[in-house]
Image 1 (cartoon, helix red, strand yellow):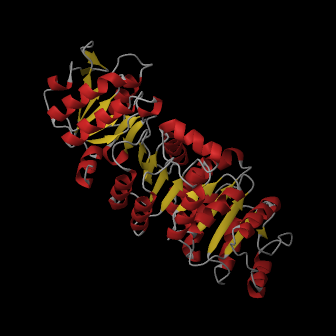
Image 2: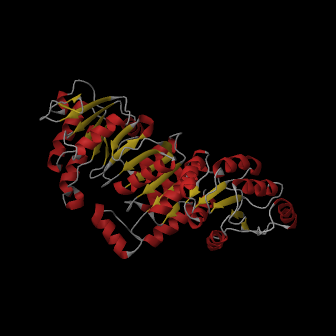
Image 3: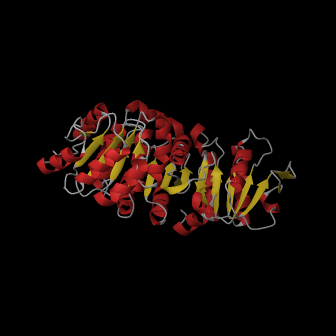
Length: 446
């Protein structure tokens, strides 16, 4: 198996060859080459295609052996039967890493062909991602050997057996302005072990949270021991489908993953503090909050809202999760009464009513800052509240405690404010329920 230095050389490759590069825009070999070039990668790029002199303005070589310079990383997009020969050429060229996009291996019953490829890689000391995968996008090296092209850099490393799930995570993070450090699509996951990828990202300074989507593990005990060690450095969010019998059957047929007992696996996750998501939305929501906020000192939550109904929804989820909604206290209520209009409901949730402005939130929060009413604050903007991000960013210094936002019903104002909130380091969610569940994940942080 490759060591961490070899894995690091894969992500920080100084030269890349795309074997199976194509001049046809509908082909994956074209898309990947285009994304590498347009993503700003500064290293040498070598398209490999014996039928073309150049693609996208870059001269082609007929084979890896014809490349004039060194090749650190080989991206393979050729039919499965041709992959073993390409891997032998990669070994001869001294490549350190390979990303095998090509499918047609173990996932369709060609286990012997996949084993042949991996034996060549292991003998040659090549770290492999894949096969049957959607590739790698590593923002610190501006290396997008994948699709779609995502250029917004953040603190979330996404390691996903499903390329689509990884791409969705990266896309949502880009839309939010949150960004990612990396997306790594594992596919059949026959190369670099998940454990090694976790350990690599745990050492990367840019990474604050590791989001891991896997469909099964080969050695549950070894995985949990590695996860426990990683959790000492970085939070881990896990999405492992196949909780039901039918889901486990689908996972096994997808990439021939080993599912095992989900109940046993779930209990082990809880024991070591590994945060598990039940769906893609939770996977993203939990990763978002863990990439932005420290763990609150306690479980007390104060909710401020312009929407009474949204505040009730948030309170329901908080109670379900065992998050305390303590009374504000007589002194705090009196301070609020002196500052706020009479229609406001002075409780927790604190209903600032539908005509609330960002300044009304500011007044309420500054009044509460003198009292120890909560460990974390949820601000629900249930209307088009302009200036919400600027206000929240300003008052959190006085509060000295984490702030989370739910923004809904805000139309164009909401679209403008949410990226500003994220840029300020304040996680924002489209519903109060998602916001509170994310707070619950933050409270489970080791």
